[in-house]
View 1 (cartoon, rainbow over the protein chains, first blue to last red):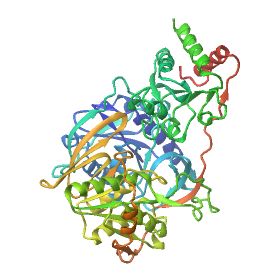
View 2 (cartoon, each protein chain N blue to C red; view 1 turned 60 degrees about the vertical axis):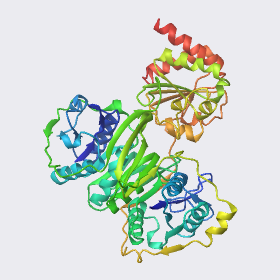
View 3 (cartoon, each protein chain N blue to C red; view 1 turned 90 degrees about the vertical axis):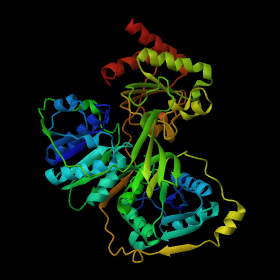
View 4 (cartoon, rainbow over the protein chains, first blue to last red; view 1 turned 135 degrees about the vertical axis):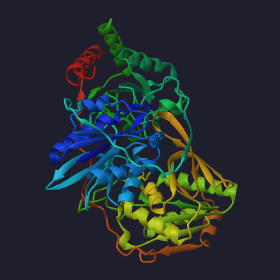
Length: 324
Length: 260
């Protein structure tokens, strides 16, 4: 059995959930084993998305001790589930939360963790988990050994969340665990949003990002107008932020946000590796740049090699005409 | 207060990497090794905490000459002493084996109040080792720290963590604790000439696996191969006048990519 540990906030499953389910459905089919999804929380998490998915079982652990996420309680709860159900593979998202408890779980169970996986394959009877290494410049194909369960975290955007196989009718099993006496390892004092205004890049399904090719701050309106026409959000590469055309929270890349929208339009961005690692898992990438040699074209699906000051207004106008 | 700061030696990310003949890793013999970038922020945080609270900073690394080199650099910017774990048996043991060896070294050195490490390394880059180390030590931990503040009175540490989407979370942990430090958390200092000279006289200890009671070190993975990722897309360049190109683009986005 493949055990998927879902992530959720404010009673809602995170977008990474569907991506984990896609990984698990595909790997489960190839390995001939069923998929179970565990939801650890308190006060109810909306399970609708999971209930539609073609998986065997949803393990719902609703416990007041799991109200605020804590790595120690998570590890304790997952270990109890492992003892009961004996999974072959446990997966979680390669996020700040996933990477907060999965290494501890690996240490506690003394089993291998392949962190940062983007692909899997079968090699004879062995499972191969492919991890991004050297800042995504290379992939390391590793084969876990020893007794299961084996652990893996899956890089957000590596699997298409909208390709979940539906039509399943998973049984929802309420699991009660004894977590009394397990004290949390930390105290949450607060959460705040770095000042961001309308910047919500992580959940945007369309992003239009501008780079140095826009030449000056005033020209950035071309980006916001195109974003409006597409119903998307605005992002930027590091030079734009360093030049203070836009605040830091718009920055996409290794020192900014990592995004994986459905559509990513890169305008006047050459595509330094630091930018690419923050967006290359987007499902469809469009690059508009007058330099045909720009590295952004290596990750793009569609490219227009021309003057952005001509192409972008034409694209915005076309989209508006089609709408209205 | 005693703070241990972990430094991983990595092949200089600015170098051109070539895959080795067995296709299991990169060729490293002619590469320069440097401290993994995030570990510099961890060490700077350790030095600042010592300046506020007093105590000592111990730098800790696993590896041969390359580890000795990054440890000397750590001493040169101000760490008080260095612990090296050097043993052929511990080569390529991955995050799990590394964390286990580091934990044994911390214990052999008499424990401490804080262990700091970079949020992730420039080679494996997964951010697992620090958290595993906390598990093996049985300490609390916090990852992705951008601010670390110790209260010696209550023996607690407050950590600001940088989560996805610009969310900043503040948590309080009991000491001892392991904290992984985010890129850009501070401005790491440079070594002065005086610091480099002083580093030569600072205590430097090297331990083998046997010294740490690690008789058998098992790796948990076999490497199949290291590959340069296939380009997942071959770009389709849309030509014509700007108007023609964008018309074609919108059609492709709708019918082929189905994203509009």
